[in-house]
Structure formats: structure tokens, C-alpha cells
Length: 115
Image 1 (tube, helix red, strand yellow):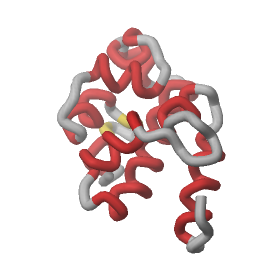
Image 2 (image 1 turned 180 degrees about the vertical axis):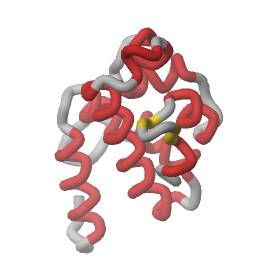
Image 3 (image 1 turned 135 degrees about the vertical axis):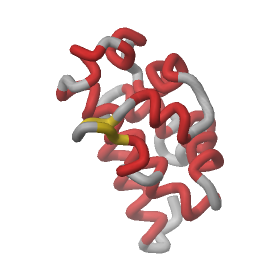
């Protein structure tokens, strides 16, 4: 996922993220575990919590994209495929504040270590 394409004025723009993934801002809110207001109210979009969750999702989808051949397929994986050893999706881990666990999982895959 091209970070420049989903940012505006130095922050991640939920609308651009949604457009890039061919979905809605409401779905991006649900996917990141944020309330809709966090992604539609200008005063809340730039908050550290909102930007952190958007960044975590964007980084993980971007890392997974080469494995699946597109951002859209990586996003589908992120939302729907439970990770071996964790029993939940990458999305759930990010929502629960464990994006680092997803990065660890992807690091193991990159190193050729079975998950």
C-alpha cells in the first residue's frame, strides 16, 4: 500500500485509505477498531491513537500485499484469515493493540519459519 497515496497534509486520510481498498470509511473504522467519529471528524482524525491504528493497518496490509499480489487481497486476508498460533485474524490483533504480534508472524514467514 503506497503510504503517499493514503496520506494528506502529513496524516493518514481515512477517505483515501478507504478508496485505495475499495471500501468505505465505516468499514475502515470497524477494521481498525475505531469509532466512526474518529475517522470522520477532522479534530479526531489527526489524534495519535487514530493515526497509530491507521498506520498499523496500512503497514501490515502493505507487508502482506506482495504475498497475495494486491492490496485488496492482502486486506481480505487481514480481515478474514485467522493466523496460525494466534487463532484470530490480523485485524483482531491490531484492534486489541497487538500489531507487533502480526509483524512478528510476518517476520517468521519472511525468514522461512513455518507459522
